[in-house]
Amino acid sequence: MADKAMDEMLKELKEEKENEGLPAEMDVDIKEEKVQEGTDVSIDEEKDIPEDKAEQERPKPVPKANRRGSKALQAELEKTKELAEENKEKYQRLLAEFDNARQRNDKENKKMYDYGAKDALERLLPVVDNFERALDTVPDEDKDRAFEQGIEKIYKQLMDILKNIGVEPMNAEGKEFDPNYHNAVIHIEDENFGENIVVEEMQKGYMYKDQVLRHSMVKVAN
Image (cartoon, rainbow, N blue to C red; front, side):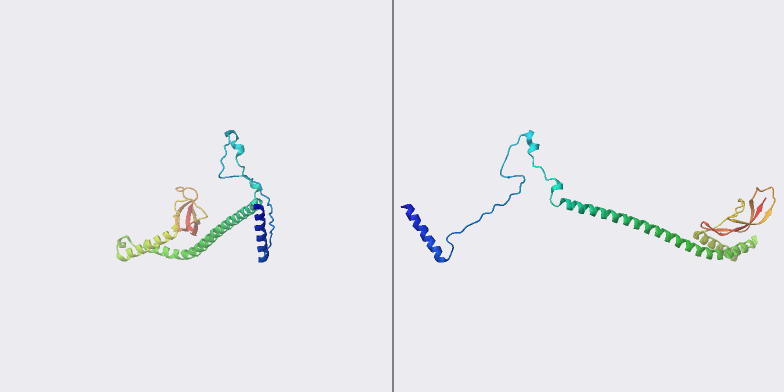
């Protein structure tokens, strides 16, 4: 009886579906997907592993060489490293070239400045000579007068300024004659002096830093 009642119910359901325009039966296709092999891990599962087999049972990481994209990334990284090294070398070369150019420019500018200063300072030396001649002609009894003292102060101020610029007198007297610095105008024989000794500086010579501003005119013994 139960089977007959069930058959009737199924028949009624089938008629209802046909009346509604719906398929009486529906086929469902189930596609099996390939499961990628890997390490099976279950967070709800506990497994007791002996200590002597713990290292063997430990999941092994995938080698870097076998990871997807690792070779391409490694190649890109190597290219980036090479490019960075090339840029570093270029930067260092440019920096060295810039530093050398800056030093050359500084030397050239300093050299041009010294040439210009040397020419101007050389023109001032006759003024210094005239101050010294004027002071040498002042009698001792007149050196305390205001006018003579004023002249001497102006001369000392001028010499201080020249010294600060880099101008120094050679003070050749008593030194051995050196043609690089001295211009011998008189030679004498005198046993009181050694050979090629400057016995008198007839006109002062001056140095500007490491350059000869004016040679000394000297009297040389023996």
